[in-house]
Each structure stands twice: as structure tokens, then as C-alpha cells.
Image (tube, rainbow, N blue to C red; front, side, top):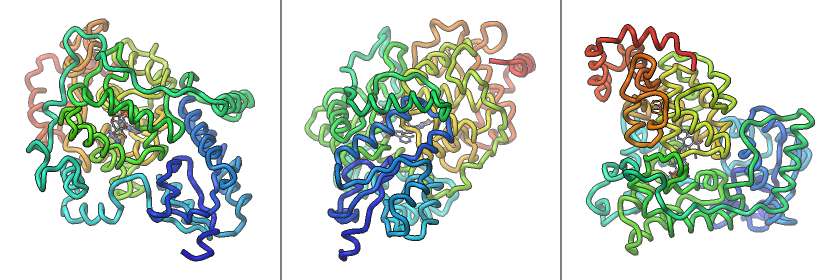
Length: 503
Ligand code: FAD
Ligand code: SF4
């Protein structure tokens, strides 16, 4: 380390807030390097974010700045460019690899910035590239990647074999909710207490709205997600101590009165950089090794982080900036206003109103409502995948470009034609009925596809298969479902009904 490096300022983006972004032992900046943080108002002006998300990001940045004290210069500017110019002029800066293509291109254009390797993920970009290039196929599968990460990082392994003898315990992990239960009955997730910094953030956001500078969707409410490393560690501890044991079996189940079920609610902390994924999976594994949680729960959680999260991050960079423009199914429909406004009055489908209510109130819902209700609705209706990506990005507290683009374009809208999934994730009402208690009170019936009681998901599913029959009948995992179209005696009526659908 040279004298110059010791005094070179290091810039922390708002999602680089944990100690692993300033750790010299891991290739981070020199321990004496001054730090720079920039709060750019234009970020909030460009998009209509959920109020809870804007609050969380600003609160986390300002809390971090308060912890770092004199070591950090905290600049409030209109744009990042202005912030850098004001704080640094042409003096050199280092920064850890930013998390979006736009931010990466921006720092690459700044003359005196040196970009350090990415933090907050298990696998380096070049390791992934070697793995992916070695597959010799244009399709990449999360399951293959996940097994490779498990083996190379020695996660839940017994020698060179998976602990328990099986890599995949999804079969044990797709249970419907317990019969007759309205709640899972596990201790509630960690919730933080607000500080004076939160009060300042709230006052600033209120003022910006009054001044007409920015506008938000969703409700303001006491902050629900960690804004500091200390809070994030408390949330992780509470999860592994009290909630991980039941994570596996019910990770796909939905109960109307139990929004969080056994989920960790750690996504926003991981994505803000307050937690490192390695510490999360290591603690889950330790709980299993000490006999406190069953293997299926530890494996389910490790799969989500070392499998899905890591895979999504890697493919975002591997597929490049053009990937977001994929629209293989040529879906161009606009999102209806009621959906973009998170205002469930626009539909009578109980599952959709329920989940939109949750998103409006909290900016969060777990993965099955995202995938099999909100995303599936968008896919069946043929909404533009770019607009759907933007909606998810703005409306969720954990939404960032790198995580939204693959999850929405690839996984939920099948807009990439199967580069990262084997089939479109969508279903009729029967799946939602099996996995939730939302259909009972609904005015529709999941088993009915035509007429007054027709479930929009059941009818929408067949409508989608019909629209894309030519493509889906060549997909090994869809062809049987497509053949089912030929057995529908009321298909014409169903198609006519769906062409008139307005909700
Ligand atoms: P848990 O169920 O407790 O899972 C543990 C952790 O695994 C999560 O905290 C998260 O970090 C990680 N994880 C699990 N699945 C994924 C995944 N598919 N992609 C990335 N990380 C994953 N997650 C986000 O962090 N930000 C998003 O913007 C986001 N958008 C999504 C959009 C769609 C359409 C879908 C289907 C999924 C999306 N996810 C996103 C993934 C997942 O839904 C959330 O990470 C999860 O629901 C967050 O709640 P949790 O922390 O309780 O997760
Ligand atoms: Fe949703 Fe259909 Fe069930 Fe109603 S019947 S809650 S629309 S799946």
C-alpha cells in the first residue's frame, strides 16, 4: 500500500454500507483512507419509489455516515456528478464495483476513479464467467450453479457429497400451509426502533413532496427494516434462532393473516450491504450442525442466498446491459393505473388485492406472491416486461436493478425465452388455492374458467398457453399443458371472455 493509496478517498455508494466495503484485509480501501458518501436527490426524482424504500435507503446512509463520523464526507447534491465534482474536483477516488450497469458506466466515465472488485457476493465475476463459459450452452441453470457454489464453498457438504445425500430438498419444502391454520405461529420477525435520524428523513421526504420535487407510492409507516449493521445483525440472529427451523417446509405457503410466515426479511439488509451473504449462510449451516434446525430448512435458506441471490447477481453482469430489453413473447400491454398505484380497488381477485395491500403498506411481500400472483398476473395479461421490471424496482424495499432485471425479465416474465429458467412460472387458480387461504373468501372460484365465477388466473393461464402455443409446445416442461388446450370444450368462450377482461 503506497502513501497515495492511504490518502485516496474511497466512495461508498448507498448500497455499500457494511464493514466488508471498507475492510482493507479484503482488498478494500486503506484503513486510513477518507470516505465519501453522496446523497443524490435526482435518484428519487427519476422514479416514483415506495415511500418506505426511499426512507430506508436515506436512513441507512445517514446512520452509516453518523457511525463513520469525521472519516466520511457526506455530500447532499442534486446528482452524483455534482457531488463528486463538489467534493473531489479532479482528485483520485476509489470505489467498489457498483451494482448497476448505469452506475458502473458512470464511474468508468469519471477520469480519476479506480474501481475495486465487487463486495457482498460469494463468487467473483471472473469465476462465474469461467463456470458459465464452460457450460457450452446458452441456457444457464440455477440448480447447476448452486451445486457448484455449495461444493466450492464447502456449504452443507459431507466431504464431496451434499449433506444428507441430496442436493435438492425442494420436495420437502413446498408444503401448503398447515390445514386450518391462520398463522404459522412462529415468533415475529425483528423490527427496529426508529431514531432521530429517521425523524429527520421523514421530515425531509415530507418537505420534498410538499415542494413538488418528488412523489412516492405506498404508505409511510414506522420503519420495518434494519438501517444499521447492528439492527441487521439482530434481525439475522432473530431469524436463525427463532424462525429458520420452520423456513423450509412453508417457504412457498401464503396465509392471509401471516404476511411474513417464516421468511427472513433480510433481503433489504443484504442489498444495502449491511450483511454479507457468507455470514448468513454460515450461521444457518451452524444451526443445522448443532442440531437446532432441520436440514431442509437450512438447505432451503442456503439455496435462496448461495443459489438464487448469487445466480441472479451473476447473470445480471454476464448477460450484459442489453438483457433488460428482451421481450421474446412480444408483450407490450401497459400496466393498469390501479396496479401502478398499488390500489387494489381495480380488481376483485382476492389474491391480487391482498398482496397489493401488503406491498402498499410495507413495500415487501415474500417470493411466492411476487412470482405466482403479481408476476404471473403480469405475464398472463401480456404487460410489457420492461414496465413490469420498473414497477417491481420502485415498489419494493429490496428492489435494485441487478436483482430486479433477472428476476422479472428472466424468471417471472419469461421475456428472455428461457435463458435462465426452464419454463414460464405461472399457474391457474388451483396452485394459489393449494398454497394459500386466499381463494375461500374470493368472489371467484379457482376451479372455474368460464362465466361469472371464473377465476382470472385459471382463465388467464389457458389464455396465455393459447396465445403462445407455437412456442410452448416445443418446451418439454410445457408441452403436456399445451396439449390440455385441445381438451377444453369451452376454449372459444374462454378466449372471448378474456378479450373483454378489464380488471
Ligand atoms: P427469504 O425467503 O427469507 O430468502 C432469503 C434470502 O434469499 C432473501 O433475503 C434474498 O436475499 C435471497 N433471495 C431469495 N430468492 C432470491 C431471488 N430470486 N433473487 C435474489 N435474492 C433472492 N429479491 C430482492 O432482494 N430484491 C428484489 O428486488 C427482488 N425482486 C423479485 C421480483 C420477483 C418477480 C421475484 C419472483 C423475486 C424477487 N426477489 C427479489 C427475490 C425474493 O422474492 C426476495 O428476495 C424475498 O422475497 C425477500 O424476502 P426475505 O428476505 O424474507 O427472503
Ligand atoms: Fe385468486 Fe382465483 Fe383464488 Fe380468487 S379464486 S383468490 S382470483 S386464485
